[in-house]
Length: 88
Image 1 (cartoon, rainbow, N blue to C red):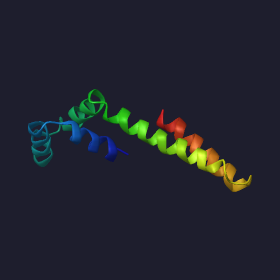
Image 2: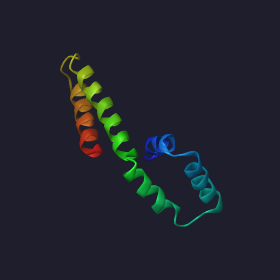
Image 3: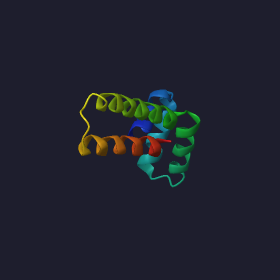
Image 4: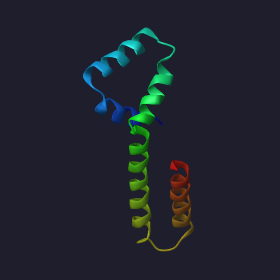
């Protein structure tokens, strides 16, 4: 999902940069996806989103520790660990 990285990117861009991107989107500029991908990486928007996701996952793992052992808890733990691996 690219929503959060894009939000972070637009927070960091100057007004003129935002306007240029929006104009490119409206015109259907074919080179725009590559430009956006490069900006997402260089502005560390993807990295910031990954760190936020990791924080949510760590909080979920901590919350799960308070639950009694069960197959449901084990499934949730496995899901959280899968998400951690996927975020890396």
